[in-house]
Image 1 (cartoon, rainbow, N blue to C red):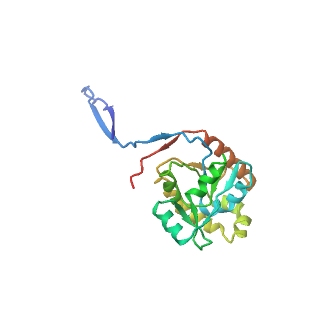
Image 2: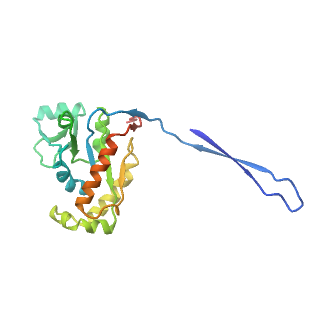
Image 3: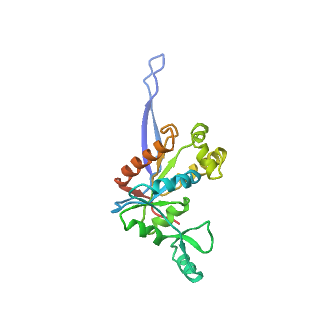
Length: 217
C-alpha cells in the first residue's frame, strides 16, 4: 500500500476565528509488476471471442501473421501434455485435437505473429512459459454490431450474441495479470478499416515493454 495525504483548510468564521486545517489520509493499493522484453513476434488474441473467430482468418492471411493450428494427439500424448500444462485449449474439432504450447512456439520461431483462435484462459497458461500475447478487445455497441451483421450471419452468429459475448468477456479483462489494448467501437467503419487498425495496434504493442503481475495461482 502507499499513502496519499491531503491537507484541507476550512474557511474562517464570521467572528474572525482562524481557519483550521484537516488532514485526509488515503490508503492506495499498488501492484508489483515485472518488465518483459519479448525478443520475437508476440502472439495475437482478439476479443470478444465471437468477433475474434471471424477476424482471425482474415488477419492470418496477411504477411507476418499465421493462424495457430490444433495438434492431433494420441491419448498418452494428451495426458502427458496436460500434466505439463502445455495444452492451451481443446479444439472444437474433437478427436484429441488441441491447441498446444508447441503449436504457438512453432509459429513464433518463424518470426511471425501467431493468431490465437482461443479464449482468455490461454493467457495465463502462456505466461507460465514466458510467452506474452498481444490482447486486443474490440469494444461493441448496437451500432458497431450492425456493421458486422453480414459477417456474423455467415458464421451462424447474431448481433445479440456478439453484444452478449462482449458484455461477458470485458469484465474478465481486468482480472488479467497484464495490460490489454481496447479499440473503440466508433473508430472503424467496416471490416477492412478494422483490420487495418488492428495491424497498427499490433505493430505498436509489439514495440512496448510488457508489464506483468506475478502469477499467484
